[in-house]
Image (cartoon, one colour):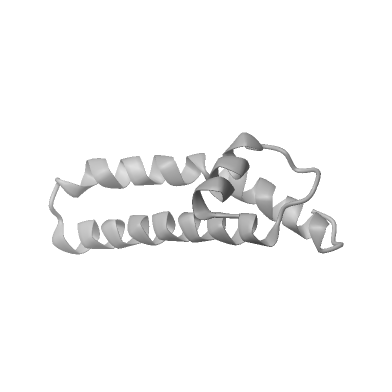
Length: 88
């Protein structure tokens, strides 16, 4: 499963906590989630240390995006746990 296919599959199953998820589906989406999270963290840190107001809109947008992809991340994690024989 490619990166694009994995992300599409996760967003199609936005809040589905039952079933199973492939290993590649979970890890590709985890990569996307991590990139967005570290970018948000870096921008927040840059805003705190520099104090410029230009970053605030970008930071707010990244936080909203991060919150928007939190539910599919937890859903794919639960499905991956089911695939490994654990309860989600």
